[in-house]
Length: 134
Image (cartoon, rainbow, N blue to C red; front, side, top):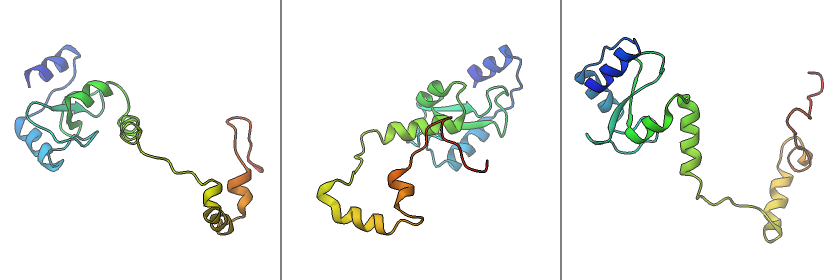
């Protein structure tokens, strides 16, 4: 608590945080990190500011693990969660449909709404492709 208070005092931010509020937040989050959802312990839990321009005040605190709190820094929460999701799924297999599964390909192709050209023959290039009528 004293470390958070010193941070906010040095940055001239408001500090209104109590142990009861932190415990209530941790319980509400089921003792899981609010960013990566790992199990929190007394040693790994930290009070992460949602908006880093504000101090440690009610409504601006998310209980997260120290690792996520340090890694996120000023990154928006949504962007950080996306990066954690990508990291979590980086070793997952991506299935492709090749010649061995040509019957699956035929079924998918036949059941695509709007015609198969939308999915199989079109692509968009950033800044190059324009939408007609826009």
